[in-house]
Structures are given as C-alpha cells and as structure tokens.
Length: 303
Image 1: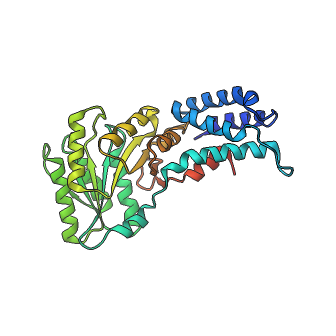
Image 2: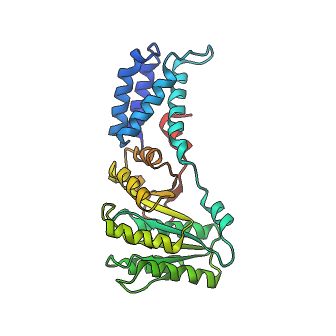
Image 3: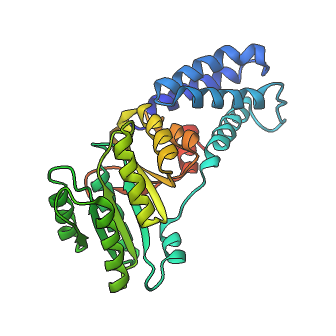
C-alpha cells in the first residue's frame, strides 16, 4: 500500500518524540532516523534533510497547549513542515486553465516530454480522455517520428478515443508535425492540442535541442514532464535537466499505483517547484487522478 511503511515509521517516531523533551539535543537522533526512513521511502536526500530541518526548527522548545496531547502537537508539526515544503509547487486546475486560455482560433497547447519508457503516450491519451469528459474537443500530434511503432500507437489511441491524430512519416521534423496540428485545430475550432514527443535521454544534447525546437514552434501553454514513479531518485535528475534545458510547467507522475514507497511525489514537488498535474494509477484511460498535495499529507500523517 502506498506510503504504508513510511506512515508506520512516522507514527512510531512521532510517538517517541511525544515522550521526550522537545529540544534539539533530545530529538536530533530520532529525526536522523526519520530522515533515513524518508530516504528509504524514495524521498531525495536533500528533500529529506530539508523536511527534518523544518521539523526541528518548529519543534525546538515547543510549548504544549493544555488541551492538546503531545502526540497531537507533534503530528501538527510534521503536517505543517510537509505542507511548507510542498506548497512551493502550487496547484493547476487544468479544465479551468483551458477555459481561461482557449478561444476560437487559439487552441490550448500542451507538449508532453520525458525519457524513454515512462509511459508518455499513454499518459497523454489519458489526459485526452479527461479533457473530453470535461467537454473539450482535442487533437493529438505525433511528434515522436523516431520510435518504431509510435505513430501506430497514437493512431490506435485516437481511434479508441475518437480523437483526430496529426502525423507525418517516420523521420519527419517533429516541430513541423506539432505546427500542423495547431493549424488543424485553428481551422476546425478544436479547443486543445496535445503534442507527443520522442522519448529522449535527458543527458543527450542533440535530442534536447530538438525538444527546444518543438517548444519554440508550438509556444505551449503547458510543458508537461512525464515521470515514472518507479525510477526513484533518477526522476529528480530528470526534473532538474528538463527544467534547465526546456523548462517544465507541470508533471504527470505515471505508474504511481506500482510504487509502494511513494516518496517520489515529495521529491518532485520540492525539487522542481512545479505542480504534479495528474497521477497515473493503472492502464485504463480512466486511471488518472488529479494530484492533491494536501491529501498526500493527510494520507501520510492523518488529519
């Protein structure tokens, strides 16, 4: 179960903290254990350190209200420390954003990017499904003209969803495909353009240059980085590199249903400072959920 081991460790440590005098000398050892539990739970080292520093700062010399138990006070300290770190990312309400920006002749454009194998195409198809449910018309662009089977995969998603797919032949210019999709949307009054790009190793400069070209041509409203929850701390490095090279506006965290630790969500939000737009929780189109950072904290700490 997601967060189960981390939640159990946090409960144990908060109980131990509530039986100690709350000063740096008394609690530093317990917080060191908590930091290791966070790291083992998939939270990046620097994020775990920041969380523990925030907890220590709040807890040092804390006075206990007469009507609250020590346990309640300690849990509140944990809760506020987690919220402080996560609040930097903000939240995006996609349907509301589309309604505010899309207009006749001016479609809302989203570019999906990420390394190979993260589930980028399937994640984009899920977003198409969700947008249709919200009443928007959608066209998808296959700007992955490199990977064998990419065109066929997206066309099949389009067939199942009833969504037009703009594609060129393999080896075509990726930016040109995206440009044609935007023009198609303008001509046909379509609300949203979703651009699927080729998976690229985030250390490959040539592929990142192609990504920059796609972004320059499309001028997207949202650049969405798709991350695989199972890749652990490598996802943090992907966040940093894509953010530096092309910019990232939001994250789609795929395969979260298979991640028993769950700490990657904390790392992504704290490291990138950008919101997690959606999480993928299965293979079906409907296996997509809006990410709620407050719920993340409640699931972990309670309350």
